[in-house]
Length: 149
Image (spheres, rainbow, N blue to C red):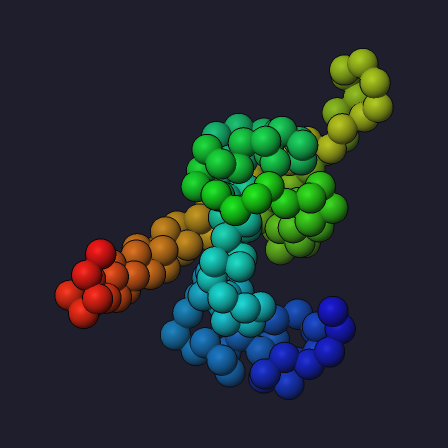
């Protein structure tokens, strides 16, 4: 996981330090910053899906995992370690906050809540996804004209 990205940034360095070099026209936290830095937009689709679920109300990781298909995450449900890793990254980027809930029976659960920064990230993803949808629809139209259904 550690190494260098295409802009020479090591994984341990915050992307915001390199942000202006690779995306001078995008605001910090914009989803294309993340998709360019870490891979394709769809490979990071878990981020906005978790944020969208949290926009509906606070929740804990396992509950979020079960609800992912409700917001369009149609890949196989990621393992809990992946979900919690993404939630920690979202928290490190101030997009979510968490607190321990000790009120219920059994072990304490970490409950996550979206922040205004997280809501802004969802808006950015919506813009990017609309553009991607338009591109995919155009591609499929050309494909259908060339090859049929």
